Amino acid sequence: MFTYRLPNYIKNINTKNLCVVLTFLYVLSIIPMIIIGYYNWPSVDDFSMALQPHQTFVQTGNFFVTVWSAFTKTIYIYNNWVGYFFSSFLTCLSPSIFGERWSALNAIIVLGMLTYGVMYFFDALLHRVWKMEGHMAYGLSMLTLLMIVQSMENGTTRAEAFYWWSGAINYTFMFGLSLVWIGMIFRFIYEDGGRGTSEIGKQGKKSLHRVLRFVWICTLGFLLGGSNYMTALVMAVCSVLGLFILFMIRLGKFELKGGGNVKWLWLPFVCQLLGLAVSAVAPGNRIRGTSVGNISPVKVVLRSYYSVLDVCLNDMMRWEVLLALVIAAVIAWKMAEKMEFELHHPVVFAFFSFSMMACCVAPPLYAVGNADAPRIRSTMWMQFLVMLVLTVVYYACWIRQNINKAKEHDKERFSPVSSTLIAVVVLFILFGSALSIVVNPHYYSTTSAIVDLVSGDDKQYLAEKEQRMEVFEDDSVKDVVFEPHTVTPELLFQSDIYEDATLWENTIVATYYGKDSVRVGKK
Image (cartoon, rainbow, N blue to C red; front, side, top):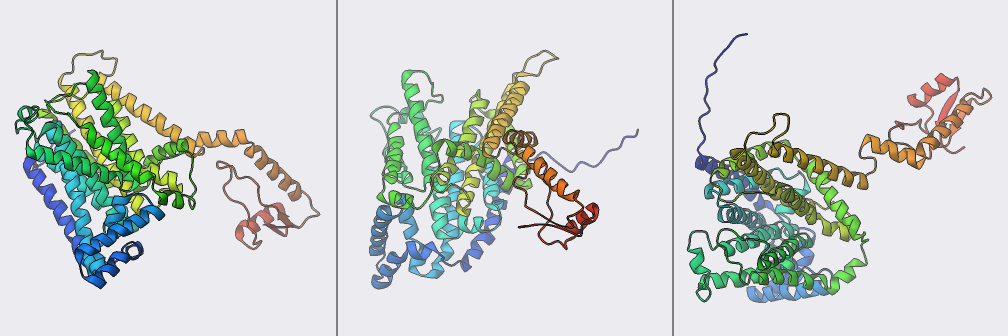
């Protein structure tokens, strides 16, 4: 053997410099997207949803009267088409109502809210709650935005996510705004970290800033209840979970660390659920519901979990995202150095994260039986990426915390960390396999074989082959015509002969059995 030394050009990377680079890359990446928005034009629903406000503006030229027209159109939509009143109102206020060229603002507005939402949420959770380095939380938000925006699947998914106003404002904008709402709740609890949390939280000494923020959180919660049902349902799950946590804190079962103040915090959650209730009982939902085929709630839940694996992982996951997640893990590993809280529930968090990913897709599955619309797929992708990054951060921090306090263990056994990781992966595989098999019994080779064995398709297939063989062995038949197979077991059926007897697949069979011609078709 021989030894050699290569020059080492890689120096220790400064964390702040890395965050600056990630910010630069993200800003640089969206500049062409904003520029191309100059050539954007309204289409499809942009004309129908904004028709009355546009006509009002053309007739009056009054901005406020136009806004009122959008409000009245929202009431009409609520009563005749769909219940999500907040999304409908903003959809009716398309920039194109003031002139088609104003559609150039679509991408700026939507990307702006998405960017602000992700940044605000990551700062609130990672910096304010988990007490991690603020600039690294900011860097993680930039990395997440790069993955969301740049690695979204090609085609109309991107067009509907960022440029088509009726899709972008209804889904992407609302997703970003929902992250702001959750971030505001976190910041409300901890009052911006070091600004005297305990003093601000004392009864009778709440600042005007805190009161106004609370009012805005309640108002925004109600409005988000009237957003598209993908976002509204995810927020409703967060609201129910928030109410449960508050109830357990009240009973003394849970402890809120960090000196947070949760007094009156139940009200924003109730407001959000109330907004969803107002949306759900809309007369328009019943009218629209007559034109779509619903599926059972149990099947919706199973298919929602499966869609995370099938759509997000199988269809949309890309190689650069996997590598970016490695960077996210490295950043999180570094952030764990100064993390004040210990993480103890990796299995629970993994299930929670997976469930939040699945929750996003449940409404379209229940309403129309699929999640094929590009705007729906883009929302799934955004929700999936945010929760995936949080999961990577959680596990990186949890592993480091356990390594730092690891003790000697049996050499013939895995460490507690390794054992937990193995258990989580195995449980995930088992759970995912069960979901996959429920949706597609032929998902695995062995389940495919079992299905065909139990159904008897394999026996039927063999019987039909044997019937064909009797004809092949009959020398009196020279021009053979078979009925098509009635069953095609997945593992057994590769292909059949065709209707055209002159195709080489047919002629080779005819030659093999000494026939003049062989084909399938009606006898």
